[in-house]
Image (cartoon, rainbow, N blue to C red; front, side):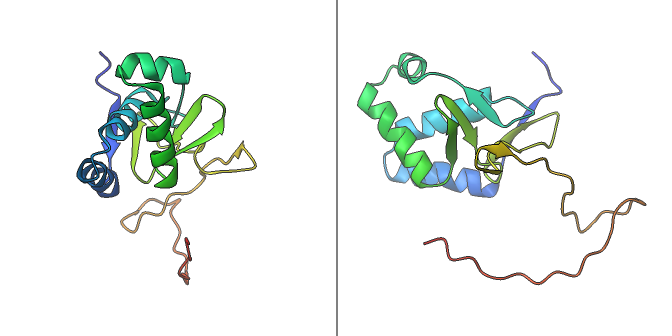
Length: 139
């Protein structure tokens, strides 16, 4: 076991799990945990067939497909390519790295994260930026 690899579950990620449990979406909880435990530490994604997910979970085909649909609807995962599932890095990621790029893509072209907002940064390379934020309508 590699002890330098860890899984980070954010407050939003744990809230998602609690929400799914309250909705009795246990297969979706299992799938979310399976994906973030098995995702690549650099891309934040895992390549796995639906048949493997069905076999690993011991659940029905329709149950696994429904879990995928639920997680996509809740913006917990995306499927940029068939059989490649990217976990929303605002919910969970594995580390050794902070690269969370596959989920954050446009037209399936991964972006590379160059800067990370860190109000406590004190290095010579950190910079202050004035920023105005606008609410986003996610409807």
